[in-house]
Image (cartoon, rainbow, N blue to C red; front, side):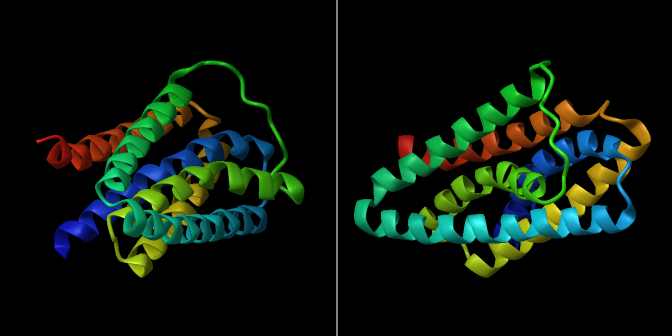
Length: 183
C-alpha cells in the first residue's frame, strides 16, 4: 500500500509538471491572484475527470484483453514520457492563449490529456481510483498555482526543464511496468 501511494504521488507530480511548465509561461500575463486561483482549480478539475474516465476505459480493456492490455499500458506510459521530454526540450515558441473563458478550458484540457492516458494505464493495472484522482487533482492544482506564481516572478526560465523532468518520471514507470512482462 505504501509503495502504491509513493508511486501515485510521483506520477501525480510528473503529470502536474506539464501544468507547472505551461503555468510558468502563463504567469507572464500579469494575472490577479483570483485568476490564478480559478486557473488552478480548473486544471485540478480536469486532472480529476480525465484520469477517472481513462481508468474506467483501462479496466474495461484489462478485463477484455488481459496481458495485451498490460503491455499496451506500459508502452503508452513510455510514449507519453518520451513525448513530454521531447516537448520540454524543443525550443520553439508556444502559442500564447489568454487563460480566461475558452482559453482557460483549452489550457486545462491540453495539460490534462496525458492524465487520461495515464488513467487508462492505471485502470489496466487496477490502481485505486479514489487515490489516483485525489493525488492527480491536488498535485495538478498546486503545481499550476506554483507555476503561475513563479511565472510572475521568473517568466519562464524553468518551464521546459520541468516538463522534461515529468516525462522522465513517466518513462521510468513505463519501463518498470514492462519489465515483468518481458521476463
